Image (spheres, rainbow, N blue to C red):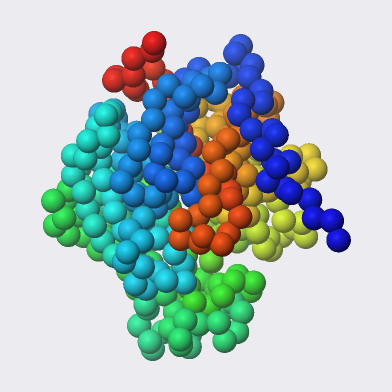
Amino acid sequence: MYLVDQNKIRRNGVGLRAYNPRKSFNGYTLFTPMNGDGTIYLINMDGNVVHHWKMPYSPGLYGQLLENGNLLYSGKVLDDLGRFEQWGRWKGGAVVEVDWEGNILWKILHPDHHHDACKLKNGNILLLCLTTIPQELVPRIRGGIQSTEADGQIYGDYLIELTTSGKQVWEWKSWEHLDPDVDIITMQDKRAEWTHGNTVSEMSDGDILVSFRNISTVVAINKQSGLISWKLGSPPLAQQHDPKQLSNGNILIFDNGTHRSDHPVPHSRVIEIDPSTNEIVWTYQEPTSYNFFSPYISGAQRLGNGNTLICEGNFGRLFEVTSKGELVWEFVNPYFHIPTDAPNSPSSNSVFRAFRYTQEQLPYLTIR
């Protein structure tokens, strides 16, 4: 039997693959190779690296620039796997803010942190965390592959807000607000996790958006009451990532499309939702649906000219489309790495999330 080296095929098409300077949104794109050594790259529209940071932790799972020009980064603490032993690839454990030169300004360590963290408008840090849900809830959780609990336990997500010095000021537990009879694990997922959160972000009114992959649900949480103020499930969602509020109040979501309940073919799409009606008001997907498909990770960002930057995460493909779906910029991550927590795995160029910034948002960038 002859085996095709898929990595070799993929490496032949990396770097800049398309660029229309008349229709694209000019700026600089930030991305973090997910299985890399902690190096974060900032590239220009030609795909050339103009700046990079080398962090002391491997990604847990990405970095993003703040309004002050500093970098917020979630790192993976591998010497403290603990409850993450079977989910090591999603572990975080460290959140840091660094300046343009990579100097650490503050650091938070938390053993339950995974996937995501964000800096709130009040300057505090919101962490997405994981722990076991109360044992009496376990038999009530519906869905998933039977007998796949974690030694009889099921894990769920909780959120904590911390000051940059590490003082906890707020907490929210998913199992106190979700309904086992409604929020059902997708039938093909293991029952070791109920929710599998992958994103936290702050809305303009201070509510918190959270994405729960295993139940194909996005919720908005009122911080004062702790109650869920908005909710969207399946359909239309299918194991989504990266919900974020747009300036018009709508919600942009990367809908991964694994295990769809309303379509026979798995496929990804980016959708814009009007939360007042839960109607889809804009969609990007391929005419042949399965030509665009990232079953895990991924994200999207609405740009200043109305275009959308999309991260097809599993394949390290970053591309920009107009509101009509025209491709105007495309770059494929050329950095392939073997995961630090899975040394027997093949190398990968996966990217959890990517961001485009204008020159004005990069006060410390000097173009040589």
